[in-house]
Length: 200
Image (cartoon, rainbow, N blue to C red; front, top):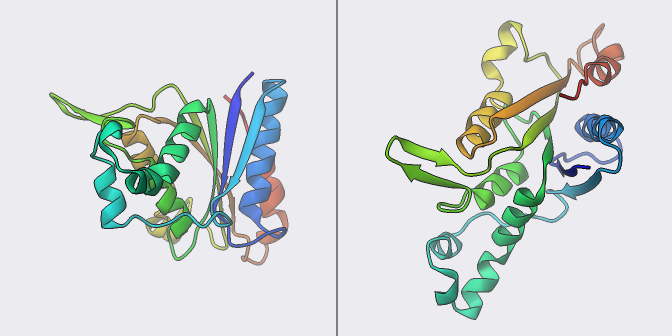
């Protein structure tokens, strides 16, 4: 049995390809690990607050020294970190917007990046503390970014791979629903993406 955290960062609702692909990944995980518990979190709907100087300061104050107001300001980040650490498998819906991820997903990343909790520093530099987890990215895009001229403008997959790897989540697989606006490609793009899902 696995605990699955499915993060949604799409501005679309029922028509979202990244949500559809992410849910298909979750279904495949559940087929492989019967009894697994999925938790779906829509990062756009919950309106994750962007970091402020005041909230950032609380990240570096020991818990017992926080005032009640400071505890409230860091509560969201603490909850996101707890949720992440409790999961065995993370599925991240990541549509490509203007060549990169949506701000809701970036805000989530900012809130889970906690020195001493999700990463630290050793003699040889940074050390990720969120180890032993599998990450699947459900990426969608109107154009084709896995190859060809568009590849240089894909700042979704490389960024997520690099930064989540920094936190210790180095086992990451990207499934792409791409060419969703490209004539001759879009007709089969979604089915091709779902058919490509293979759970390690």
